[in-house]
Image (cartoon, rainbow, N blue to C red; front, top):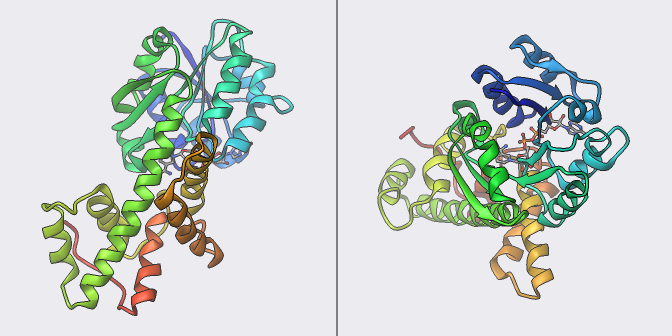
Length: 301
Ligand code: NAD
């Protein structure tokens, strides 16, 4: 418990993750542009800070959990950013889902200052964050990974090393592109079944133990589609950000990403309808409308 942890970005994910660190006994220094989550964490013993620079000056390990690469760049290199305060010998961990190009750039700049960088994006959503059961994929120097493994263990159950810095962010955006495809494919299948007169709960129960099963079918349908509750969760906007990073990767590698490009258009149609802030499982409504089915509801599993 020796390390002081700085945590920047206290949203849907960052709030429960930093809370777990505090509850495990770490000294935690927090920052967010919104004061509400900061006050909530102060109530459980975290310390406030004035800026990302202030967090970095006072921490051994600095973690960020921010929405987009543009915001992460500003928090690191902007005025009063992490770069202005981070101490030699400390570790920076970006746990957001971000762009591996930015991550590699940050790592290069920090390396010159004697600071090690890891990318450690997570999977498992708000439930995993609350329960400390996230899957965490980690890129960067293996010795640095070993040094902070105890810190990561407070937040995650499956903690896996992926190789060079940026490799975990690469893997994570590819995972999320696949999630986007699975959610759309599952929605189309459910809507077609309902159109054909199949009862949705039975369809989910049978496909969940058949070859069509997926996280989208088992978890997203249970938690969002069947109860018709599209409060996030994981927003359409954040998912689109991840697909865009994956598609850019394809462009840089000079390779077509056929389904990824098509799926991006589908989710863009939700943004056009003003649904960017909803949980991405709201893609079900696209297929319900296209096939003129009733709203698909079902029983909890
Ligand atoms: P969120 O929008 O709920 O939270 C982001 C937080 O960052 C907010 O509290 C916001 O006020 C803060 N913030 C924004 N700009 C800031 C700035 N300049 N300085 C300091 N704080 C700032 O987002 P989230 O859902 O918690 O996602 C965070 C990251 O985790 C994203 O990269 C997302 O893709 C990834 N992720 C999300 C989920 C999920 O289920 N929500 C799951 C896995 C990974």
